[in-house]
Amino acid sequence: MRELTYAEALREAMCEEMRRDENVFFMGEDIGVYGGSFGVSKDMLQEFGAERIRETPISETAFVGAGVGAALMGMRPIIELMFSDFISVCIDQIINQAAKLHFLFGGADSVPLVLRAAAGGGTGAAAQHSQSLESLYTNIPGLKVAVPATPRDAKGLLKAAIRDDNPVIFLEQKKLYRVKGAVPEGEYIVPIGLANVKRAGEDVSVISYGRMVQSCLDAADKLAAEGISAEVLDLRSLSPLDADAILKSVRKTRRAVIVHEAVAFSGFGAEIAARIAADETLFRLKAPIKRVGAYHCPIPFSPVLEESVFPTPERIEAAIRESL
Image (cartoon, rainbow, N blue to C red; front, side):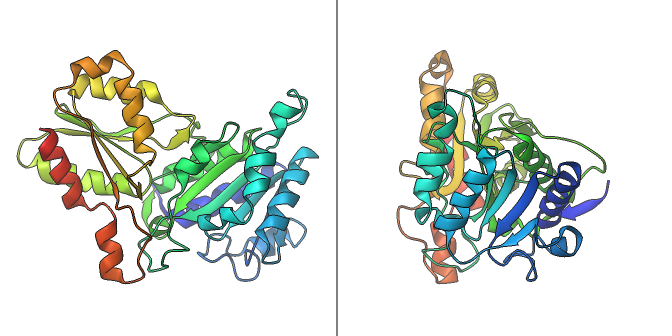
């Protein structure tokens, strides 16, 4: 199977959907001539022209609001936030408008909008450009939230998001853009709300999403040499959440370690732990549920300090050993 980078897979998904549906268009800062801050939209302006690749001013408030209006009028906008941190600038448009309007109109209208955003740290972008804010989005009824970990899932989930009639927050963790992986040729969709077992195991369930999935796999590979069998579950989307896949895995292994790049305190891992605790699965557990996340502090600029804040394969391995 051919290999694409994560960024190339995203671009292919957008191009295929724009060719398929003339109502799909793309807008954001520096996405045209420059090709996007992370190169995702390279050469798209040449194919689709300035009417469908819309360069915007540096005003997230304006262009996210314009996207909501366009979606209400039957278009299917893809909007790029250069950094997911910039939600703070346009939070009203997303939370009070896009997420609510289908409900407020009694189902008579919908907001088929995709908000793509570069999330997470690891690139030295410091405190205002390195956050993982997914638990903020998942707390809002009316928003779907996808966080693909591989190029294959990035393409399939983005195509599903573009075709969805609901607003979708599509988080792309920055360290993944240059990662290569197998991507099928031809048409395929990855459904939003369906988790994927990346590695089967018997001794402990390691539940994660985004770039931490690979760190979990690295830890599982190391432990396998000692005879420890860790199952790695990639959630792929957080809202809707595939709770059935989580409970099925934990019932089998009877242990759970939850890993995410976001701050552990009040992070999305707490929701996963609560789902396990609220089910009869709780009574099958052989050990307390473990959570591994970033420390509760702003992300430092210093590469050494930044690396120390996020979960590492070593921290994940230690949590698995404690669970065992």
